[in-house]
Length: 287
Image (cartoon, rainbow, N blue to C red; front, side, top):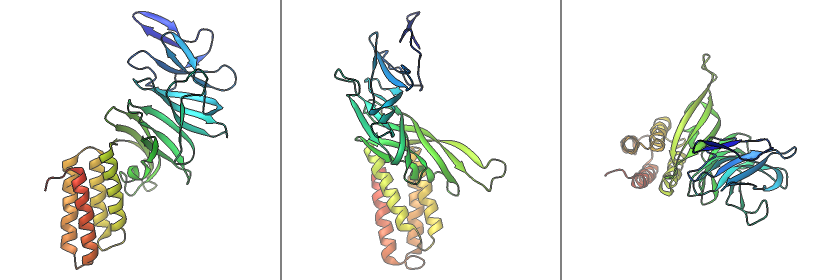
């Protein structure tokens, strides 16, 4: 593995097989996160100011780095003392390999892996869930937030069999991809698609409200029509199309008002109107 700078090449680990396993493994200061194999297991290293240092692990014998932030933090996947493999964020050690690691855990089961991070220490990647599927995640204050249900809302009528986050910017916007299965499509039953999502605190609050509203709507009156409008509003919101999302929410409100006392009992209609109104306020819809 080499570093090219000012017309010259530098071997980062002379005499040792080394490699990178991501596309964001060098930062603006020239620090590099890479991997090498001193024996049977893979180790991660951090190259700073001409020195490559083995960063250690979460307690096991395996670490692979995938990305480094401009502030010098590193993410990837590492073995734990119990033999699991978890996503991590590494902040530098104090002299002993393994110090400076934070285990990001999983969404219910292992493995998990971080693929990208920003300078606010937000990590995005994927994790196995308790039901055995792989879901995209983003961290908020060090805790994994499951984006799987939100990605599923992007593909109504199809089954999302895997999703993962692959990049995140300094504003907390992330990009990722997901794989859907549509058995009724004989020409292309499996497809890969991309998504973009906003993950600031207000965005996560809005996502929670969307999920609450979808739960309230399920099984009442003209449920499919109302659910479709909410899902459309969510998709547009995740794509940062605020005006489109607000327009879909307004169509939802109009239908609830039209069906109140008919297909929707007045009390439930009032609850839906209140929840949708709160959502409009968080998103920033004009009155």
